[in-house]
Image (tube, rainbow, N blue to C red):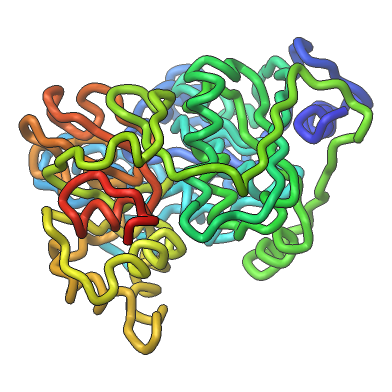
Length: 429
């Protein structure tokens, strides 16, 4: 079996499962946030009763992150609903905005907090829950109805996905990042190229990537229609997880002779920086083909591109230079925010490099403009802006205005573009 099949089989109490099987699985973690949490709670109470208790207090994580820094009353109401439910159920893992426990974006915070472990089943009311497959877990997004059912029962009926394997080998050129790799893949197979499949990533290039960069790749698996993205746990993964949790886990691995739906191979040393042009993540173009395209702002943040390593890449380009257009910096979590102060490049902190370059005042950790949000959301588009962003989606209206055009790119390309004021290949800087 593949790694995905083995995890699902274990959660179902089965010796073997095959693609297409419908199985009941026991859930290890249910994640929800301020956008979908109230709806999930509503389904739970409707189906299980107003006085029902959740299936397991230790397995539910509630992490508001989307519409936090806003005056919008409906956004505040959503968080209040979560607070009331957490108090009613006495849930231990609630990261409350406005308190010391607040963390930031759920998909970056969940691994940081030790809630992600190899071999486990994670469901979340957010499509980018597939991020956590980077640590060898089966992790996928679900709707409020499924989440409400899990909240009461701890189980979900799942169809076992087929697996598509992506083998990436070769030394990564210094001007590429994981964002370039996944944009290449999505551009090649299309936004429906992995529909309801497991995208399994392996190869010497993957082995060499940091945990943060692996998260970037799995984060965007859903942009190809995948059920989940997954990378087998290695010594790097095990060390990362054990440093953050004492809970036991068992890493699982694909059998070498297991047939898969398809296999794609890449020699990463031959790849170039890419962007996804408006308005789909598979609208791939080489950066050099878009050189000179003027932009109104550059956005560096989100669960995809707001991790500490993303900002390190951007700072390498911006150090000693000035930005030519409005440039927004949004750390994904408080941990990342602190890292901007403590992470140095030749004696300069990342924060000081960005400030000297003339970026906008650095925003507090949250999803911010990645999902548009209320009109006062930091980074939200309001008109016909052309934006180059390290986020994961460039759909019409994704960042607010339906008239804006969003290009997706790596932190290197984003920083080079910020410095020049037009889309720029980082190799030119």
